[in-house]
View 1 (cartoon, protein in one colour):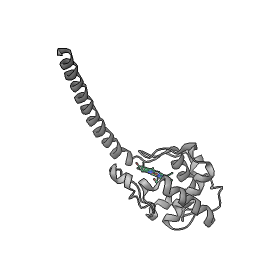
View 2 (cartoon, helix red, strand yellow; view 1 turned 45 degrees about the vertical axis):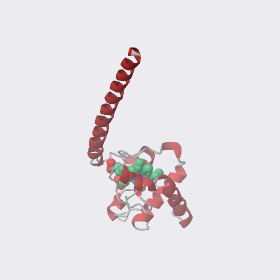
View 3 (spheres, helix red, strand yellow; view 1 turned 120 degrees about the horizontal axis):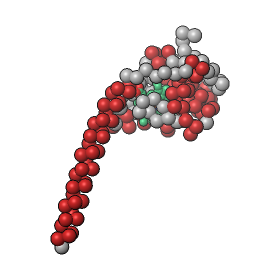
View 4 (cartoon, helix red, strand yellow; view 1 turned 90 degrees about the vertical axis):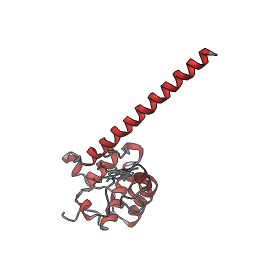
Length: 153
Ligand code: HEC
C-alpha cells in the first residue's frame, strides 16, 4: 500500500516536471519563429539562376495549383494569401504570395525553397518529383500576377 503511494507521488512528480519542460520548450520555439521569419535566405547563385524546365501552360499551372491545395494551402491559404488554417492555429506568420513583392523571387529561388524548406516550413525535398515542384513554382507565380517569370527580367 505504502509502496503504491510512493509510486503515485513519484509519477505525479514526473508528470509535472514533463509539463514544465514542455511549456518552456514551446516558449523557446516561439522565440525561434520570430527570429527565423526575419532571416534572409542565402540561396546559392547557381540555384537562383536555374531555369524552370516545365512550360507554364494552363495545364501545368493547374497541376501546380491542385498540388498546392492539398500540400500547402493549410499554411499558405487556398489562394496563397498566407491565411491557412494550420498557420493560424500555430500562430505562424506566413508570407502572402498575392503580394507583388514576391515576384522578386526567381523561379530557381522558389524551387529551392520548396525543396529545402524555409524557417518553420518543412522541406519537401524529393517527396514531390522535380516536375511537380516546378509546376508549383508556376502556380505560386500565377497567384501574384499570372506571369511565369519575374517582371523585372
Ligand atoms: C507548416 C506550414 C507550411 C506548409 C505546409 C508549407 N509552407 Fe511554405 N512557408 C511557411 C512559412 C512559415 C514560410 C515563411 C518562412 C519564414 O519566413 O520564416 C513559408 C515560406 C514559403 C516560401 C518562400 C516565400 C518567399 O518568397 O520567401 C515558398 C515559396 C513556400 N513557402 C512554398 C510552399 C509550398 C509550394 C508548399 C507546399 C508544397 C509549402 N510552402 C508548404 C509555412 C508552410
